[in-house]
Length: 141
Image 1 (cartoon, rainbow, N blue to C red):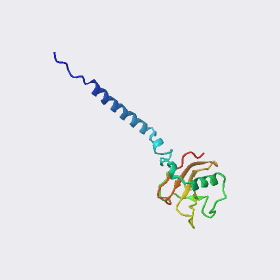
Image 2 (cartoon, rainbow, N blue to C red):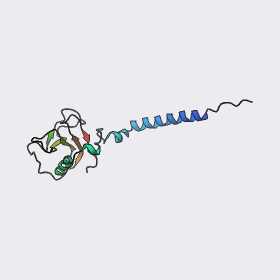
Image 3 (cartoon, rainbow, N blue to C red):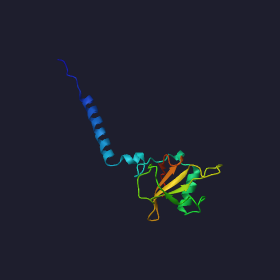
Image 4 (cartoon, rainbow, N blue to C red):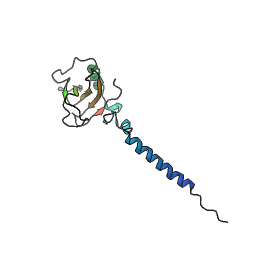
């Protein structure tokens, strides 16, 4: 008597792939994908090597409310005119210079903060290319 082929392994694999796809789609619908992309803003988190030591110095200065190396420019409203960061009310973002060693001017590097109406910064962003791109700085409280 000839034995019929057992297709249960193939069927189980198919069901497994289908289940993984459904779970992945569900997580995406409920905003879980933002964890991989970045914070609630959707801006990607900075990798550890993207944030130079001088940016951390700037963050410390902001957390201590100055003094700022460029008071005529630092702790001023950032308009987000490029639209790279999430759209917020005017005045939501502030910008700060990140010093570049050996450079005789402000350069391109900035820390931009978001929120802070309650006295606490809600979001920290770093740009190394003068607002062309941003990453969200993780781990700042």
